[in-house]
Image 1 (tube, rainbow, N blue to C red):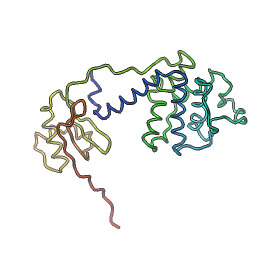
Image 2: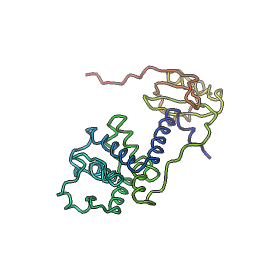
Image 3: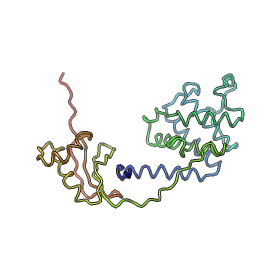
Image 4: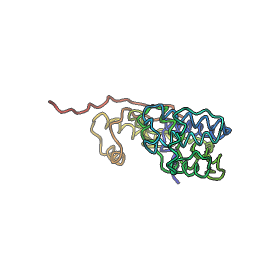
Length: 259
């Protein structure tokens, strides 16, 4: 069986651990604490400027201005709402989107729709804080997202899945990692650093534009079939992120046609 942790760099594993820790902390909150965390996250998206101020503008706006505040208010009736989070009376004419009548099943249906279909895609253009708020709200969907845990607190049994702490021991090996900007790609995992030597040296030659020997070419042929070779750095790292070897490369110049 493949241990997919081998495909994740130390940086990626750390990012996942931070998100998992946040989810576990949310699960441990009382309903009032959950309400505060939910509304803080939804407001991060609203205040990013990436969303319209009209709650009827699109599905995302309806979710942010109406559904998540309604869920937070159900968790904590004393939670103070902002003006833009309070439904107007004329919205009641649409029975499909009106969820302010205290009907938990109608609220559950709305949150189920968001968990199943929502993406808040515009958040990808936002700050890291906005992206983190989006991940917090819907990452893992029905398997421990903040929305699923919160609605399960209101409607017990609707989403019983919770995020569990990682109790597995670290793997003992090292990883060969190509870095593109802020993104790390694990090229190889091995229990021994020496097993990565030939790969490392051959990839350095490729990145420097040097000719490879036939043996080196055969060694990395599989890598070159799917891996970009314009990485900015190449490293061998231990499981905890300690860099054993690293080489950086100048950014490749982009071609621009002459006038």
